[in-house]
Length: 275
Image (cartoon, rainbow, N blue to C red; front, side, top):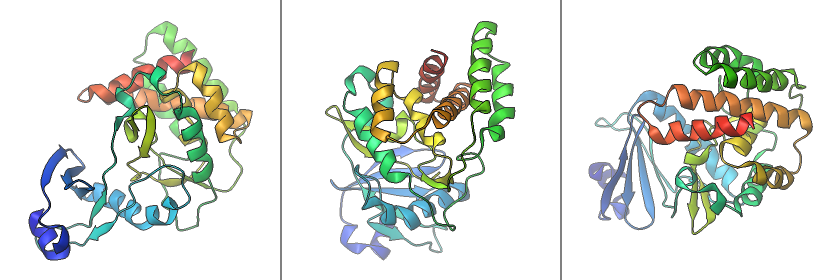
């Protein structure tokens, strides 16, 4: 990484570098006090980084919470095949590691954030085959996952799913969506939301996908405040959002054997959905 900085952003090349995460998709390093560097480790991840590079600078100015719009863009070289980003460093820890009772200001902050984000997207916005789509597109995965759930919970979850699936579909224009909005992609610092991160799955479509946050992050007594701050979720959208929360919680439960944090998000969301 030092060589890439030397070649393309030499004014940053002398800053201290600390590896923070070396995951399946990205190498993430702290760069000095103010920045992070994200280097994709595979082609699929590189495509997601490209989405952030293209669209976040355009969206960031009208959003009420900080987002990781790149401050520098790195180009592919003979030694490294993909674009990479220098983004701001935001203080805080993920909301996934927090007691949800400590997030009293979060419903208003995140409801307002999504209200600002959810505007009609341009025709050239990214399209995600799994997010922002009609709930029918998630039905097969939900049914397969429910086969591994105990009988009592399965019956309750089926009732939730059937109600969500029967709700009126989204007939508005495709709206900008975060696409992967769950507690691990929200940072909290001193009890307040400090940033919303990881926009690689950003897409356009039904806002119910993002509104699933009402169950994946919030306990029941915070959901009404979140919905009120968002301000425009009719009953059908709210029902679809609950269906999305069920679908995503099942994904987290069935595909996170090697990721205890995501498994806990799935467990908590599943219980909130059933309540």
